[in-house]
Image: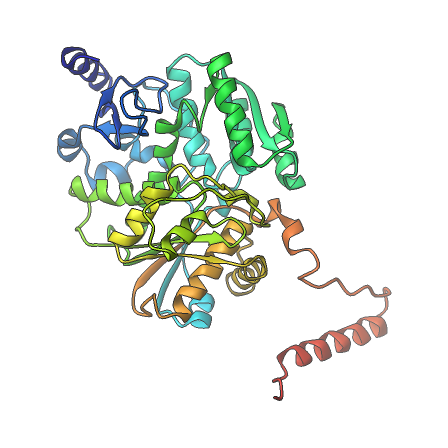
Length: 438
C-alpha cells in the first residue's frame, strides 16, 4: 500500500466518524488497509489496528463517553469500525464488584472483581470481541462468519451472528463441555466437532478461511476481534472513578486479552482521560496448559508449545499467539505469571462462590487460585487496588465441580424428617470446621 493510498483511505474512513487509520505490524511497523488481514506480508508478524490518537485527544472526553450507550459502544471512537451501524446487544458495562468477604479471606484491603460472568448475551467476555468482529465483518461484506473455539467464543459467535442475520459455522474440539456445546447449538449454526485439541482446530480453520473466504473472527478478522477486549480496561477505569488500578490479575489463553487490557489502559492515558501510572499485570494459567507461565518461570523470551491436559478447557491453548507479548507486559510492569493445579482451580471456583456469590467457570477459578497464590507468596501488596477479571460463567462448566460441592439432603414432607436432616447438616458443618490435631 502506497503512502498516498494510505492517506486517502484514512481520510475516507475518518470522514465517516472513524478514528481507525490502518492495520500495523507489531514487529516491523508496516501498514496495511483496514481489510481482512491478520499477518504482515513482510515479516509475518501480527497486525493490529492503528488509531489517530491526536483526533481522539481532541474529540473524546469523559463526558462524551458517559453520555454514550450502556454497552461497549460508549467507547466506539476507540474501536475498529468505520460505518454507522454497530451490533449492540447490550454487551459490556458488567459489574465491578467491591469485594468484602473474599478480600477479608485473602487479606486484601482493596480487591475488586470485574464480573463478565454476567455479560450479554452469552455470559462471557467473548461477547465483547465478537460484537466488534461481526460489526466489522458486516462492514467488509462477509455473509458467513466462523471461529475456532474452546466454547465461549462459539457461544458468542453463534448468538451474535443469529442476531445480525449472518450465516454461521463454528469449530470446536469434540470433547468440549456439554453446556458449551448446547449453548452454541441453540442458536442454529453449523457446528463442527473436531477430534483434536484447540490448536489442531485452529490449524484446520486457517485452511478453511483461505479456501472458503469466510470471516473467521479469530483468524482473518483477528485484529478487529481482539480490540473488543480493550473495553475491559476502559470500563475498569471508568468504574473506579476514572482511575487506574494498581494491579490486575487475568487469565491467559492466547494472551490476547492480557495484552488488550494493557492497550486499553495505555490508550485512555494517551487520550488524557486518566492520570498515568504503572499498573502491575499478573496472568493465570492451569498447570496442565501453562506454556506462558513456564516461559516466565524459566526466564525465557519465547514460548514453547505444549499439549493441553486440564479441566480449564476455555484457556487450554497450547500454542498461544500472543504469549511473548504477555510475557513482556508482565515483566516490564513488575507483575507475574503463575499456574495452578486442577484441584486448586476447583477450590478457586468454590472460594469465589462461597464468599461473593459469583459462580465462575474454570478460567475464573484459575484466576482466583492464582490470585491466592500470589498473595501467599507476597507478590501482591495488601494495600494495592487489585482487580481480578472473571471472564465466564460457571453454569457452562458444571462438570468441573461435580462431586466437590456435596449433595442435597433428601427428606420426607414431614417436620421430624426435616429436623433430623438439619441436625445431620449442622454436625457435618461442625466436623468440617473442627481443627486438625497433629
